[in-house]
Length: 118
Length: 110
Image (cartoon, rainbow over all chains, first blue to last red; front, side, top):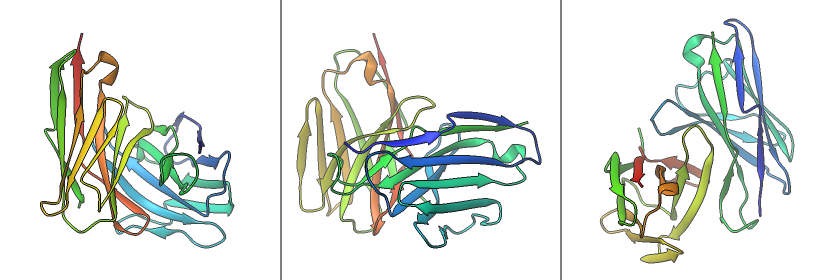
C-alpha cells in the first residue's frame, strides 16, 4: 500500500524562528501533495496544493510568504512556517495523491505534525 | 467554508451498539471518502464510495450515499472501545482537492 511519512511529529519552537515540516511518499511517486491545517477539535482546512517542479497553489487566505512550500522531487514536499508566532501553533497534515496505489483510491495522509510556538 | 458537515458533532455510545454518523455536502461530487482520526494523529482512510454507488460495505462499516440529497452516512456496527475517534467525510468538489467535513467525535464506552 501507499505510505506517506511526515516528519517531525512534534516540534516546539520560539517565536520568530522558522520550522520545516517534511512529507515523503515512501513507496510511490507523488506529483501532487496537499497541506492541511487543523485546529483543536476542528476539521482539516486545505492550505495549499504542492506540485512537483512548479509553484504551489495556495488557498484563499493562506499567506504564501508565511507558509513556504517546496516540492523539489517526486517523493518530497516541505512546508516551512516562517517567522512563526503562537497563532501558527496547530496540527499540520500532508497528503499525497496516491491514485491507483494501495487500496485507498485517492489520498494517503501523513501522521501529522504538532507545531507549538512559544 | 466547509463543503461537508457531519452530524452529530459528538456521539457517545456503549460498546456493542451501532454508531451512525451523517455527512451532508453542498456541490456535486465524484466520490466521497470517510476517514478516522485518533486524537492528535493523522487520518486513516476507511472507505470510498463513488457517486454512482449507493451503498458500500467494509467489515463492520457500512456507507450509504444519496446524491439527490447530497448526503452520506457511516454506520459502524458492534462498536468497540477502539473505535473511539473522530470521523470525517471528505468530498471532491474540485478535482483532486478534497474538502473535509466538520467531523463527528465518537466515544465508545466499555
